[in-house]
Image 1: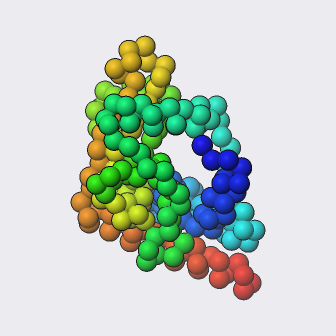
Image 2: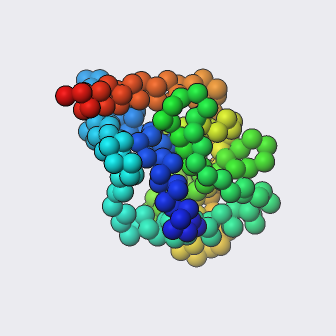
Length: 205
C-alpha cells in the first residue's frame, strides 16, 4: 500500500500518459470502425492531465475499494500458495514509446509479472468456472509486458469471502506470443498520435 507521498509521486509519473490499466479504452471502437466514447473520453482526460499536470481521478465505488483494500492480502496468499516471491515495483515508462507506461502489481523471477484482482464474488465465480484468464484483462497485461520487457504474467484473483479456503485463490499464467505484445504497442502508438493531434488543436487554436 502506498503512503501519501508515494501516491503523489506515482500520480505525477503517470499524468498525461497512456497507462496499461486504460489500454482497453484504446481498443474500444464501434462496429463502423469509429472510436467509442470510452476512447474519446480518455483522450480528453489525457489532455486535461497535460494542461494541469494532475492525474484525473475517477470515482471509486464500494466494490472497487474492497478490491484495493484486499490486494496485499491476495499477494500474500499467492506467495504462500506458490512459493513465488512478489517483487515490489513502481511505474515503468515504455523504453521506446513516449507517454506510455504501466504499474504492474509486482515482478516475478524468471521474467514475469503479477496482476491481482479482488472482484465481486459473482465475477470471481464466473472466472473460476471459465478456468481461463479473462479476455477483458488481457490488454492491461499485454501493455504491462510491453512497458517492462517481461514475457509472461500471473493473473491472480482472490476472494476471502469464499467459505472453502482452497477455492479463494485463482491463478492462471498468461504467456502471449510476441506478436500480440507488438500489436498492443502499435495500438498505443496510433492512439498517442491521436492524442498529439488533439493537443495540437487545443494549444494552437
